[in-house]
Image 1: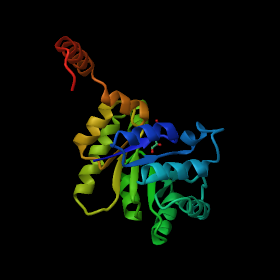
Image 2: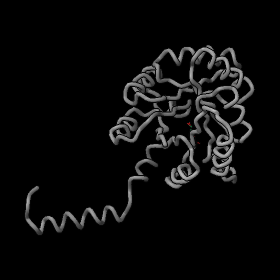
Image 3: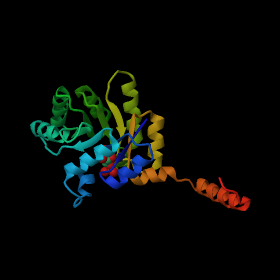
Image 4: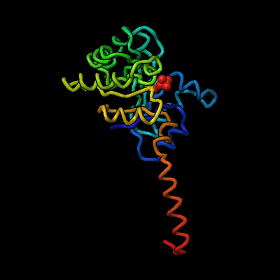
Length: 218
Ligand code: E4P
């Protein structure tokens, strides 16, 4: 299972990379807008690629296939690790096929149904991102969609990797792993929550206290 981090914040990415668990990054226009004032967005994406050296998703904002393809070419030129996020709309599907033909990898985003996932795979997306948290927010079990897509993909030989996106808490990560998703993209805060366990902290403290009593040095 691959872990991506869902942020455009270079400090968070550096910190997560130092943990040795990071395979890639997903950004989107909202996440990049949070970095306003920290330099040109292309420089930020380039820096992220240099830190992670894995797939780094950057999203187009054009609404027609021609504009999406044009924007995708510019984003892909930033670094070889850039993967183009394309919203799963009709024009987006057209763009995914055209970019595949050009050898540019895509991540079909804003996926909320199994049919959209099938279409993304058929069009040749390298990744697809179902948004579990936003489905939960709308009173649907987001993880049910992941289980459906994994089951469907198990029936065929699609190359498209499933990224569990819109992750809100550590349980989402566990459920994504149980469902057999290829990738989970996790906000920094949730990575920190995954590390923490109160019994680990209590245990570390007890060992340190007892070691002090021994009065020895390693
Ligand atoms: C995924 O690639 C998106 O960037 C992200 O997971 C969306 O999450 P949100 O629903 O918390 O905005």
